[in-house]
Length: 151
Length: 258
Image 1 (cartoon, chains in turn brown, purple):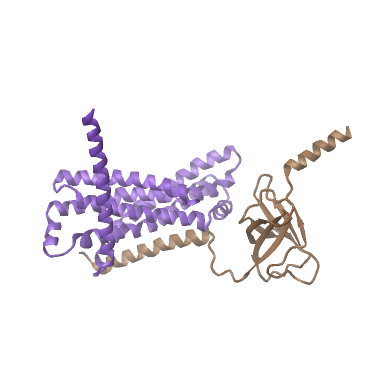
Image 2: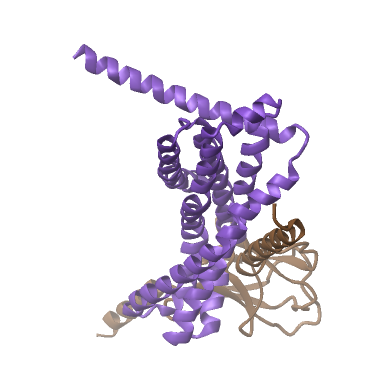
């Protein structure tokens, strides 16, 4: 056996580097987060969420502040979306949650537009105003219909 | 006709008996793992042979695979005007499939074959019998540290492979083809999820390492003790382990969402 200490060191470095790559893949690439105590969950109810999916980003002014954590149907068969956002942002209670699309064919995300009230949304509370997804199908349908009427 | 049926029956019996011997051997490795002494020094040496000596191969192959992915996917995605999707496609295909499978096949050829050849030549020179004569269990002394080292080394090498491949695709897609670096990395990070993708990758590489460790040490222990037997066992390790890795890859992928 040649030079035990040297070999042990090299093996140790190998294990550390390997664990480092796995940590990079998990934390940075995979988006694994620990704790989560500094996050609050807000609810928003929509008539139509279009192609919105779990883990879609939540943005204010284009800056990501959280993500969609779950999507459910409520008792009135409307879509309830749970948003996991950073706490301490002081979103006023009359803020609007709107489903928007990034680019023409891009992914859908939730854009929060701030209101004017002083009171802020707390953990578990629901957005008072929402805007459903704009469906291109419906828009084209309406356009064709309107064009037909005006003839 | 009767002879045909009889030979079919004999082959089926041999197959089942072979599987039984492998399972038996795997069981004795697990028992050896729980029994003191731990053979930590042998484990470190096996980890050096199987893991550290594979690093250069894994990094170079990972980087090359990433470069090819970057080139191929960039030109294909450009046809649909979707080159922003490069990071997502590269990340998902590497993390979910290419990383564990290609790293598994490379380690099979690089380290699995070496372990079979080493144990096989130990057997053909009657070193395993010598150990038995000194009341040392050869499974505990020879096979267990090597099988464990392959199981531990595989996820680590898998991680190295994926990271180097991501860098290789970055090098081609961003530095050569001119895609924006931020677009590539943010596409990668938003597409790959920890639970479904990285978790699946880790599970796969762990299972592949376990299977390769079992196959490589079993083939070495069960080879016929002559030069030709060692050669056959080494070839058989590479062939069997490659097929088993590809098959179990399908099974894990299919069962993941169930």
